[in-house]
Picture (spheres, one colour):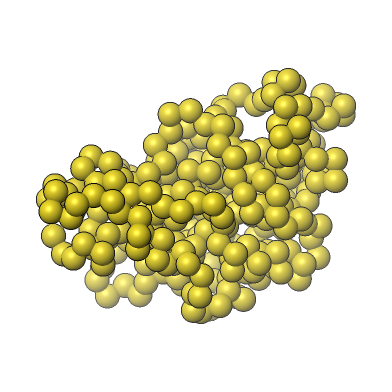
Length: 298
């Protein structure tokens, strides 16, 4: 399929969908077209597939690239989120394969976490710096409206799910040691993955609503039965999870309210601390899409 650049007359996207391990396409997308973007932060992981899903304009992005080419630490998180902002997305539904740190969160379950805990090292998770400082509020990192919609979609789809809890974001690409896994359980963590914390922070800075649909593929290594699980079983669970996730996403896209009433859309209103007169012109230009309504045009 030929790539196309976004034209000025292209209708804006409402909802961004980021697919994780196993979810590299979105069935049911009508009139899809590839959109390849270049952002001030480089190229996104892959082309965005833009089209209509359940009557809404959406853009789908494979987080690791189609064919799963990128390690978690190699994902261009800033470009991915900035690209969705360029397309007009106001909500992001992010799908992620995770391991369970709780006996009651079983393989094939879905989790819609409300919190994140950062165990990554050195990943860039802000658009700011280089002459402009901003500190967003991040006490509640997930948009409550999108979280509630995802939970309702899980219920409507008949999938076993849990709403709430904490997603621990680890560095990877290796999985946890048994000692780490047991410590995370004592900390009260619920699921473990390698990607979504950076997305959540950047989405908040971009004033985009964000929530995660976490697909439990297996128990993390703390579990006595962990070593008995074969690769074939994990792949089977992943494929079944992806099929369920696609159904949940379609339901959620259909039922997300048209208007936003959450605070996500004004996350930067009181976050920028730098004296406006001291912000370099090049920085203003680079971040115009994010800060223009607060700083004026460069």
